[in-house]
Image (tube, rainbow, N blue to C red; front, side):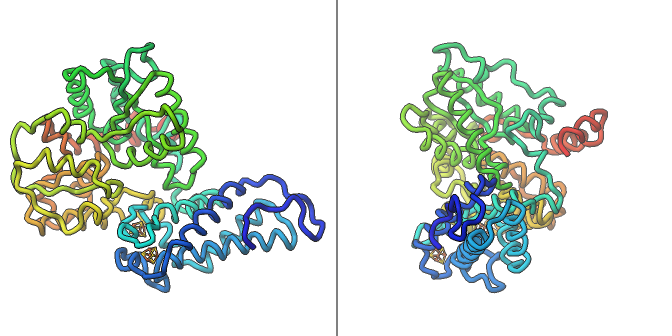
Length: 442
Ligand code: SF4
Ligand code: SF4
């Protein structure tokens, strides 16, 4: 059975197929997995690059092949008897119970793409995993274990980030906001991304001042690129959020979007690609800083760079290294195209509360092994994750001692007080507004 488009009426004269909440997901899954199967030669290189493989899963082709078995089972059931969404959900649940190792892998995957970074067939792991996440979300599998979806519904008014900003007065009234820009007032959007705009407000303000000083006509947006919804298998909501952002950019006359997070950049570049002619250019802040000839105030020594797993093309990492060219740089075992995940990717904590800390800890250990005194992140979420790991992860003393900084802190002479950030985040849940926070986020 080749296509996933279900017939209006089966050959046996069964009831017509009514629109299913699964229709788009099943269609996307089959297209994506067929494409991956066509490009995968089964060499197993991917499996050798990630500890999640094994237990009978020898390569990405096993993950994709199992997906095709599931899709075929769904189609065959329909052809035999027709069914409703409940039957599809049950079929997905049965499949995950039967192939529990595969379910575990696809839930623990942080969508980092390290496994396929050097794939000879250019298969992308995150593309393979997204349909699995969508099937899990739609069939209720995310809801069975610690469902924290409400806290990261970044397409709604209240989520972890907006609640934190609201309760801690992080509003940026001194800047022009995207939706307030008058005709012809701005042509550049500064898009810090959720983590930076919420927790690194001093760095946001310093970057804004630099843009002012260099004569940019710019606006800020406090919104999200949609990435948290990707890991939770909600592609249609990601697409809607991104389309609205680009429509708002178009209305404000935005010609370029400056990103700090490579994950935002990846999402927005893809969204712009779908949006077509007239869509804004997306550039990385490090590239802009290098183009502007911005210099570091001093050259720290023994630094290592941690590249975001979304930055395998090095649109942030390469200019960053040029900016720090006067420093002695310690090379991590995994960097650039071969970088690992900081531990924050892929919404894995809702399935495995430990694995994020393990991933963050191994990066700190790599930095220590490389002889680094300072671990510099280009991505604000990586900086957040390493700070959290140092404070709460109880790492061994050698890696607990390493300084973890975002490059903007070193550029602007700022030190983000992560202990205060985490204390404020905790207070959200326990302080005087906790009843409201709990009602909005759980
Ligand atoms: S590295 Fe690429 S071609 Fe080789 S098994 Fe993995 S996905 Fe297939
Ligand atoms: S994307 Fe990352 S976590 Fe997922 S299978 Fe590949 S290397 Fe492992």
